[in-house]
Image (cartoon, rainbow, N blue to C red; front, side, top):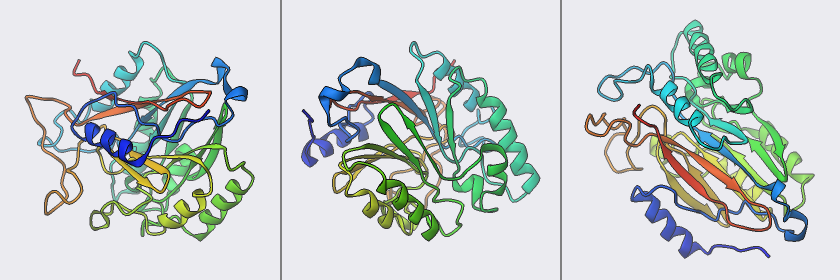
Length: 303
């Protein structure tokens, strides 16, 4: 039996999360339809999303600990009592630079720092800071393909690239690839889409959109159990397009203001009384047998 959450209940939960309460559970569509086939405990797993680490960023008024925040985040993850099955980084691994050699230096440094994670299965994705200036050339040298798929247990993961095109588009070729990948799946397949920019028009004035994201959403719409996780906006946001929920992640370098809440988008200044306020990562639990899909928000610890 599959338990669905209605739109009103979803929006109420989103409002709670917006108030800063952690550990909120969202029934996000990542559920197995055939409970009899999926009831085995062995099909349960959880993974972790980290995003917008912006390695190479410097700004004392924004994050005076910029040189060690990533290492502290990794130490926090390594201290979790139960380690995740795998980790996904949803873009902006490094902070932008016009210098191609410096870009590669930052990518190499980021790679070396995250190698300290206890979890060795890690999936990476580019952000526009990593890839838009050179169409992802340097990123591919270190982390491989810009878009790809992988499967874990009974869930199909799709990594989309909406950053290497400087216009913020997915592009016709990748959309065709997406449709071909989806065409081989059952309409009741559990699907997770990982992307950097939001696929919907959250706030295009701040580049919080994907120009052809609606085409990707349209391709996904016939599938009953789809969930989208993204980064880019440096804060939690929960949104529905039809039956498809979209969840954004906090940054691991600096928070940004709510969409349209200020005249100009800019990092929120560091609060010495509350170090690492607004920064964090999240864990997501996939449960077999048609159960809910919990999302738990974790802060970066100070120590």
